[in-house]
Length: 314
Image (tube, rainbow, N blue to C red):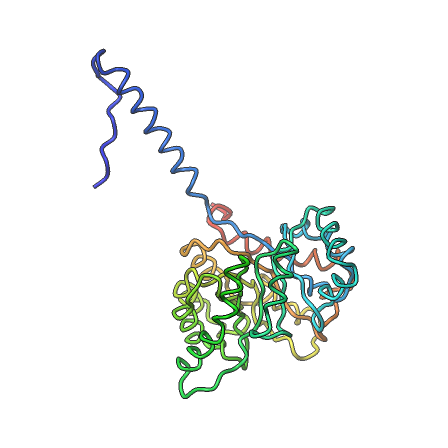
């Protein structure tokens, strides 16, 4: 039963001051509660791999143009910005970030796998980031649950380091990996012993059923820590005409992100969203120039934003 609120009308002079004070406190509490109920908004991050091996000096100016304020740094073969950071030096990279008012959010290191992360987590922390994305690899076992249990157990030393550093390890679901099927995602969400081990959710690698994926998002809840706005389209392994390749992007392909976005809102998802695709071959920009890449990302962003209740036409 809700607490009774003070009645600010028809009060005696003797209790005026007390009641007036109570009214002021109640009004302040109401305003505070309303301020805390923020409408869902996407928190965009820009993946450097979308720009192939273009230099960071060309990519960083594009971050804010895409509606993002953070960057996700990728290494070869998808890009080479992680290698560029080592060539520039960490101090020089920090200065570049500051000059463009950009924050490092994520470093993606599929090349390291899930069991060689300690040194890279320290780099993420030192450069101001808080997340490291990688893959799950594979584990032996008679059942999927058993294999996932072994994976989680093997991750515990890495989780301990992540907790110490304040870094989250996000495992992306990927084809031909342990974390691939909807059930495998549910098992990881269930078994993860820490909020420092979560799931980087890629719709591309799951059945292209919006309702199924919306249910899965709801099931994962707080263990969903990163979201790729990325559909399968016509795939990303064969060379296709660019218009077909770009069907991986939201708003370009046929996947209805509406139910998934509604599910993200329902779980109060507060993580980052990366508008994403892979070019063929890997390591080239999605389109030849940085400005052209930014242009198509913004079209996808407009589509995603149109799915939010406050932005739908009356």
